Length: 220
Image 1 (cartoon, rainbow, N blue to C red):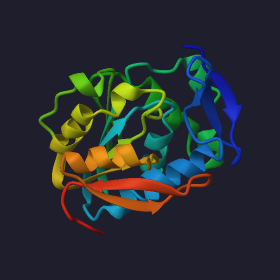
Image 2 (spheres, rainbow, N blue to C red):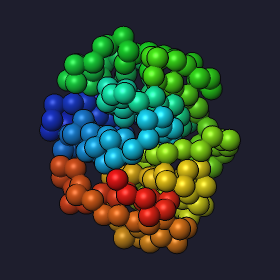
Image 3 (cartoon, one colour):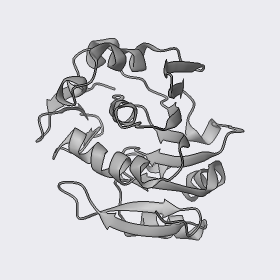
Image 4 (tube, helix red, strand yellow):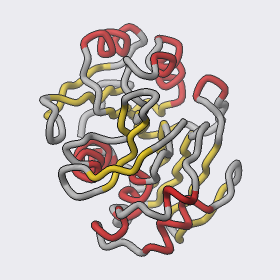
């Protein structure tokens, strides 16, 4: 599918997919949204020092880069699912690393690192990228956080099914949780039907709410 580079309201890039009439991130700010949803309401809301993260999907690498930037004194094993990686022509133009004062070589390494194998990005950060879809993904590892960053339910319906969220529930540790920008009622009812405790949180710029789904009643 064709992808067009765009600038969002906080000055950061995103990609627009004409065939889906959908963007990879919020037009109100790619970095602003990712920090609010996946870092502040995800990574920084978990108490563990050694954290296993599962991301759907790798996309532009923004969530991965921000997680690495906010690692603090933790150790993170980061697994990212991305059946359709973007091209080098696109990721070489992205401005995320510049806006968050990160190293450009590190950002490129996230994209150029080998698929289907563990790569040590730093002493405290291990990356495993796979082109498998969640429906075909098998892992002996349990996860503490799931970054659920698929396209919207209207554009990518196969990612928002009961079966997918049953699998997410099973993949989480007992004190784990899922975070996502989505706050639709039907989606939240699906989460509840598979056993999640659903929490409504303030949304990122441009959205009233977002969702965190706890596997148990664990709270920060």
